[in-house]
View 1 (spheres, rainbow, N blue to C red):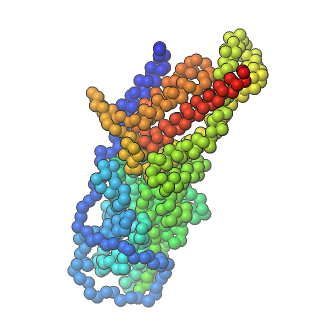
View 2 (spheres, helix red, strand yellow):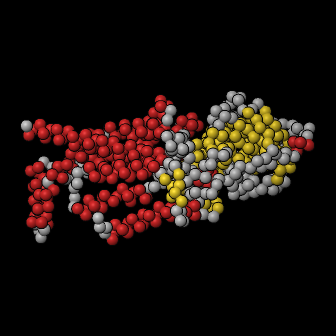
View 3 (cartoon, rainbow, N blue to C red):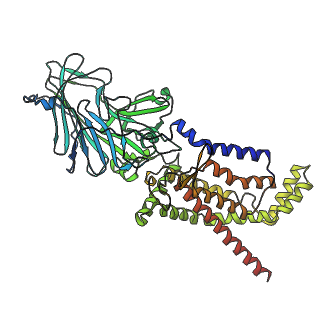
Length: 564
């Protein structure tokens, strides 16, 4: 078989992409050498089985309270972080900064499966971790750590602070993990212990920073999905890509929001309060990697001597799983980012079906196969109609070829004759395309859903160790590159070639020849596709082949019966 110059060029470019894709991903930071290791420090650990209490509303208390008189030396100098944990999450609180230093997802492992995923909220601001309270335009000095203790399942920290004008106040903070949830309940109380009235005009509750998922876990990702999201107080949802330039990332006008979040492909951090608040956002570049954060700007207030004001927040720090997000806030599942526009609703429905199937069969591999078959069965009549139309088109190809040759100098007359032939044979020239176009939104939503679902990460099936990564069984060492052997994508390509072979041939010969090379080109472009996606594509191709064979047999039987 002779190859055209265009075909050879396409094969060379595709091979170049296959061989150079992994080095390119490493250069871009999409495949880090290894995730940042968790720090090992001496800690205090506290289990939190106790039930939660209602969040206190912000209030001003005019009556002064006595300052504790007995402060031990141990409370004045706290050298180690304090850790709180439940079955799902562990947080390390720094008494010195009064913020969460690290967040560990206990049930999610790094790419090498040697440790749990550790999210470090204080990336560019090492003294400002998640749920830190700070003055945006002024500096505070910590005079003393008055109290640092566990109390009824929560960590209580009281520090004596001084502002730039020399006024002293007590800052009391508490952190409590909700049992069985990725949720931290956080309360703040400020009490003026000076002789002067104090104004607080620029206070911010920091939501923490977040890196792209590949930087945190060591996973290879095609799409980072690194974004800041927020729900406006009027019910509108917005999000901003982390890679946008600083001027486009930062909002021109302050936004009043119900909640705000930063998220990557699989993980998110959502800050929520009892009442709407003004959005705080930050973007810091670490080389080419943006580190983004969101938080809450508190309304200005004044405290008279002895007066006190309190606030409460909830922070979700965990995976982008619909059930977990919805239990945190009714609209929090919008951070899933499964697909764009209306397809997002369709992708959420498909994800819900996948989860229900897994609840029954306890295997995401089997669930993907069944979901693919369900979708293909729903579209079976539409696909059958498209196949029948292409078969009719194949039958009249010789007549169409004659018309093209006969009227090649008169295109208008040629088109008129071709339309007349279509009417005589009762053929819709678009009959093979329109049914397929109707299926594209479903298949695209299914593709996006499978590529974004954290539920597939490190879920095994047959030889696939991780349905969110390629199903590499071994690597073949070459002179300058180790070629991974991915059976599913190879099977997908072979089934595509078979499907092309048995599909009724329509169009001109050059076009048909090019279509035969499409599976090979797709093999090179999609060779490292996650195995959950290649499993779906392989089953879909096998179903198409089986449907085509059944239709051809039925058509042959009907024709033979008619001839008798």
